Image 1 (cartoon, one colour):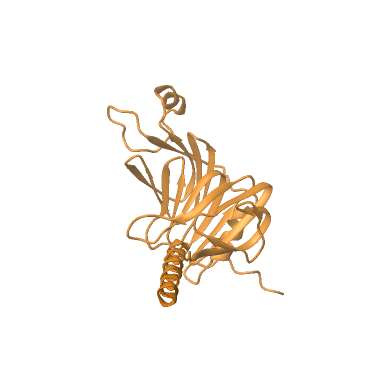
Image 2 (cartoon, one colour):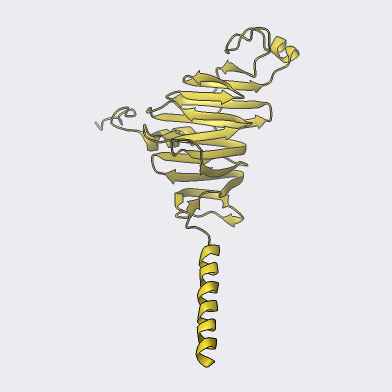
Length: 235
């Protein structure tokens, strides 16, 4: 009888241990690491240099804050009063997905760096196999500002897409006839035909970079293929 009881206890212990192992969450690989932080947060915690970023982490900054993240072949920087969630994009390519809810994101991608920025239901990606430096700013739910400093972007929204070359742009979503008339003819988009376009790009002459965000990231992303200006020679 004692032998049967001992065997029964051993069976129960093995079964409980198996359930506990099955209930443990799968190990999540880190996405990147914090390079610079001023009034920035990872989730509800204060961000600090060296802090590891995981899939699903919400990154945010206070007014005047900066948060810079290093990911293999990518550098991301949040401006002040910004918020995004990092994850992986679905599809055959293992893209980093940055879901920008508010504020400003500057990103630098090496030729092999793969990132997709989601903002206002649009998806913004660097053109394949090209070094890219760009900024995306959420103005409101119907407008984005995009500043492409290097390379080009693929912009898609509700089944429509457009290649965005270097330059500064305002992007308007689902414009009404009145808004189209107010914008006049100074916009770039595919011919609307019988229907209003789902989005329109308006080129602007003034850069919309936040402080020195883009120059700093461009300096970090310089490569022998496209180096920056040489420093002045000493007399």
